[in-house]
Length: 72
Picture: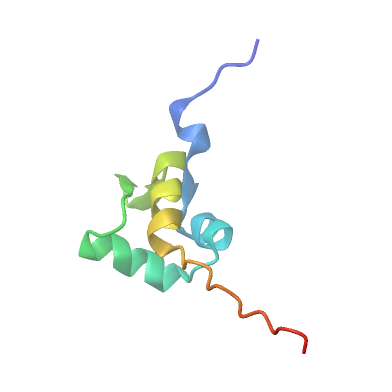
């Protein structure tokens, strides 16, 4: 039987920025401004699955409606 530690699902800044498709600096700035959720573990900035989902939703850009060209 494998035990599950609570920190297994956490990712660091590099992995989180890769998964979300945003820059590491933008991610750190968002946390430092207080607009992005995160956890500090020692000196490391870590992100839970819930943190990543929240950031993804905050960072999401709504799709624009495409204009359809009507055939004459």
